[in-house]
Length: 285
Image 1 (cartoon, rainbow, N blue to C red):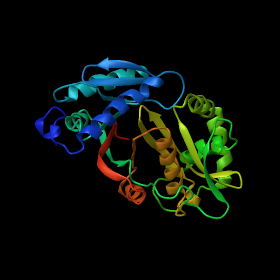
Image 2 (cartoon, one colour; image 1 turned 90 degrees about the horizontal axis):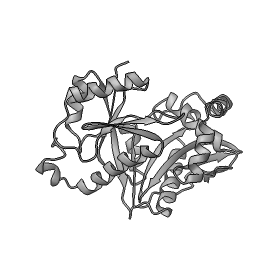
Image 3 (cartoon, rainbow, N blue to C red; image 1 turned 45 degrees about the horizontal axis):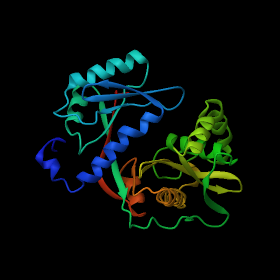
Image 4 (cartoon, rainbow, N blue to C red; image 1 turned 120 degrees about the vertical axis):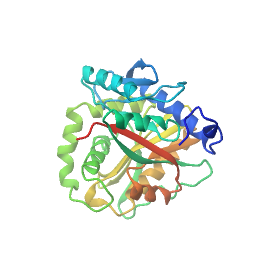
């Protein structure tokens, strides 16, 4: 794959779109992180409580990355007591993969997908019967459930029907309340930094996800369905609602990273197309 500064990348058919995503990736963590400059890499350090951030390629960098660049940032992450995590796009920073692997990290691939402005995202209410799909406001009583469901979903990855269902929700909700996740989400929703959507049945959340709008771009993140409620179109309906909401807020570019190829096929049926590969590097377990 070409380096970001090479003539081959200049001719990449998706270059303008990938450049737009690079700007977004660099900007979005700055709302809740301290930024440290480590030469060709930028380290985002979470301010306060919440999901920890990561390191990624610095905007405007030039030249290939080396294992020593990764090792220096890993040492700083260990010093700070934060996860040794790196995130980037393969097509725009191809030399980082080899550098990360030589530095002892394991690299995971995730299909990077976008839905074009003129592409319909399917029906918002893809569920049936008593299930409704809606945008969840800061004062909505189902918000804690909408934050808890994806945690249960990601604990049982994949698209198969699993074990966790509504009886497991209360404990997961209590955990989100206790760790401050609900309060932080309320602040972000009111600030317009996060939008939450959920599929709800009889007051209980079965599927939920978020998008994060910024300057005409929004990433859909954390879409998950209660494992016991899978295979009923709920994640597709939630995703369609998020796309519709992002577009209503002026986002011309709506994208996501799929967990794997099976999940990517689900999003493809909604109109998303693959434009690259998002990479995450972490220490081996």
